[in-house]
Length: 133
Image 1: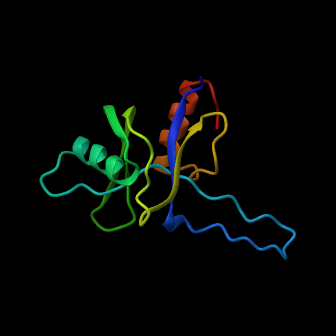
Image 2: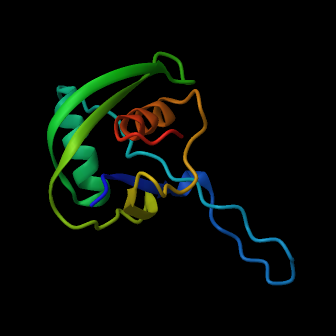
């Protein structure tokens, strides 16, 4: 089938509010990539493996650095990696995430905006499959 990408809805992106008295549908939920912090003494690659395992119970292989972006907190840097699915069924860490799933690249939910490292990573994978975002 079509290539898929793992995306998650983080609590920090807000919750879907239902308002039956309104004629408008609530805005779609924003889905992004799994993110986390590097622990003291940990390699970057190990941090990627650990964060994904902790947040969604998925094992990875073929971890590759892609790019970096300044983060809006002093002395912080966001690093972007790509990896392949190795094993596991999604089990979300409920204190961090409200939902996670594998999405077809041609049918993505609302994703972070252009200019963010998350958008650039998602767009890179989609473009490689001939899908323009």
